[in-house]
Image (cartoon, rainbow, N blue to C red; front, side, top):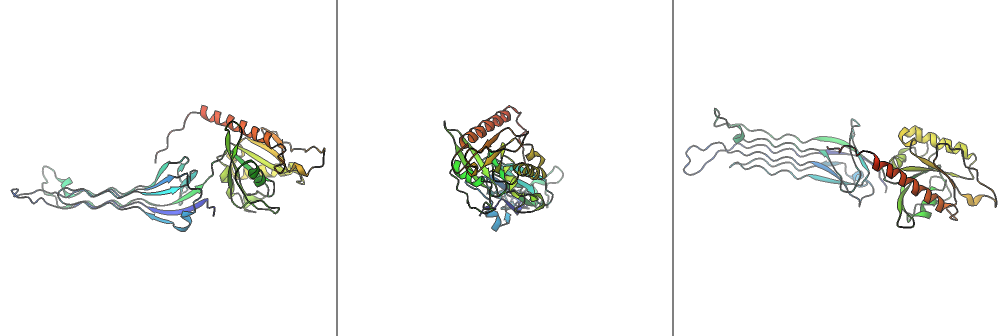
Length: 341
């Protein structure tokens, strides 16, 4: 089951309380205070793990609590710190406060970590309150409560190229033809119900990642069809390919409708570079020339048949070249300041 959104409740560990204790040693008639400090409560930490592909684990368990710190002890012994609770999530996970919508951070690469809730500080024992005028304090501090919050986990797949089109536009057929991915393919609408990723391999060890999402229909931003919830999976792509079948009633209108639905979802996504791909050219009569829609903002236009392979190599080379251009531009931009929780 592909799960790309989950809300969980996390509670960091409470700090241990300080101790009230007194020294009792042979030969020391007046032992002073010797209460140790409590240990710190454990943090709730999210860690990106490349072995995970969905948020399925968090569909069945929503409550997580880190270990509390141990109380302080006599003889100035500090309590043990509580162990951190590490929750694994797939790379590409966005973390938000579920109640306020505040962005807490993103886990992009394998091994990235984010502290979702910090453990409470341990309380001080009575030995920590000794002063020149207060030699025998009898009080201590309780440990602080750990942070508690509801967090929303939102998975956005990481791909170089995103395929966008109406149902049965040939997205899954293309992905299966150019990669080892095996999405479901059939001759009825909404065959694809979850996003699929595939690695496209070209000559000279060149590779890029392609993402196929469920079909978009007109009015999707209003909740029609499968809605736009899966468009989040192409927000991180470097370029978008709009697929339009040659047997569409009005290719121009279909292209403009797709662009409008994407724009209604996110203006930033709508500004991403894109190309237009006419699919299913094997349906044309011999000698018939496909007429691509007018797309002045597109960086390229292609006509392909994933079934026969016609035009596919040229499309892949074009996508590879544009992805490399975007990567080069990203490397020239100044690195953003490191986000620290």
